Length: 217
Picture (cartoon, one colour):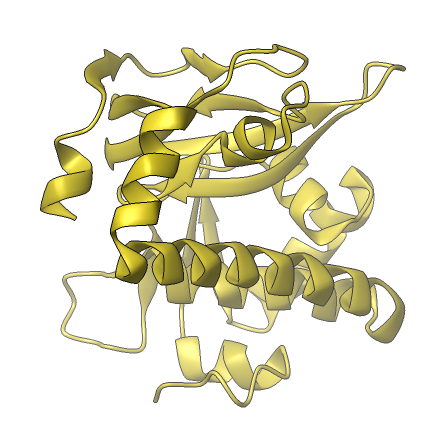
């Protein structure tokens, strides 16, 4: 990682700034070193969907760089983000010299494909309430912070998402997402405040969402 951090040029992006733009033909990648960013994509009709969340340590822009294709999504800073701009030829040379980094890159790409496959399976296998619960369960495992009340079962999601973005991740309509969130709140699984979601009991949410194999409790 230290060798990778020596590549490229450091940059700082304020909150809400675009880091990469859909359709752009640039070929560099970004290694996020601090902050949170979201990846969104827009259809020709103007519909915008949240595809993923990326945090420090993640690489973004690699699909367009390696495929030599226009960028498939826009990356937007959710908070102030620092990153290193790395040209694709420099990254390819680094990966050729560091086989452990190549394996890590392949593992990252496989994890992203696995996540996308789970969303496709969820769309057909589960009802809307379970699908939203599964998304929230995965978010809690990846971005959850324990709240300072002494309970390890309670976590606040350390990423700001509105209901439309949650709907995108779960593949649901916005009204359906609003109803599902209300149901999860009535069940005592989540609490909502302005653009913040607290998981009241992570183990119970994982069981409700049928995420048994990944339950760390």
